[in-house]
Amino acid sequence: MCCSGLLKILMFIVNGAIFLVGAGLLGMGVWVTLDSDSMLGFLDHIEDAPAELKQLANVGYLLIGLGIGLAFIGFLGCCGAMKESRCMLLTFFIIVLIIFLAEVAGAVVLFVFQPLVEELLRDIEVKVADSIEKTYGEDEALTTFWNTTMVELKCCGYSNYTDFTGSPYFNTFGLYPPECCNTTAACSSVDAHSADIPGCFEALVTLIEDNAGLVGGVALGICAVEVLAMIFAIVLYKKAGK
Image 1 (cartoon, rainbow, N blue to C red):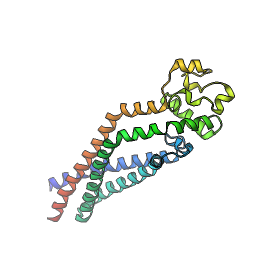
Image 2 (image 1 turned 180 degrees about the vertical axis):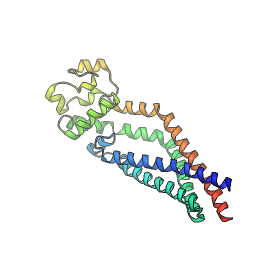
Image 3 (image 1 turned 30 degrees about the vertical axis):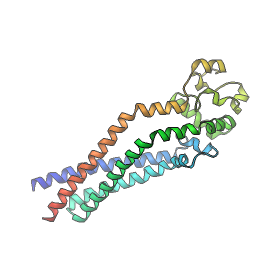
Image 4 (image 1 turned 45 degrees about the vertical axis):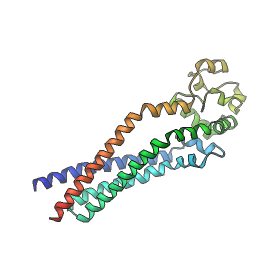
């Protein structure tokens, strides 16, 4: 009885963690979906962008789906432990196992195709630069997006400051965005060249690489929680049968 009670407590803790992770993903998904100035916003302004890349715009809906799913799983696990329902515990175990295997497969695919993703992003460099040249300073949505991105990532353009050459903004003022000189003053071509601010693609790649360890640690933590949840669920399932 004591062992069973301890397992129930541990089951509640683990599934509480799963529920909180799901709630966090749900909130993040809603934010990404509603935030028109997010990092995926530039896809809407690129003509003939690869279909595979445009699918990234749906990442918000994917996060919402994952969040709802994890929150439901956490709730299901808590109810199954509390009622000692073999049906609910077995359902919980199967769902978590499927998710765990999908995560492992996704990690393998991401590791194998990581160079292809970076190559795909580099392939659209010309199209992004063309989009900036045609509409920056004229299209309010795109201009706001790039201004926000450059401030947040401390970068300039997609590749560098030359992306803005010939844009409506440059043709009007004869200057580059202040972010390209890391200043609030006028930014001439000489100043932009001297400042040598990195492009936003390079800044984004650096940001991802710098946080790869943190992301990997969180992913391993989630996998560990899922493994514990499956172990507790199957033990409680066997005890419920007795």
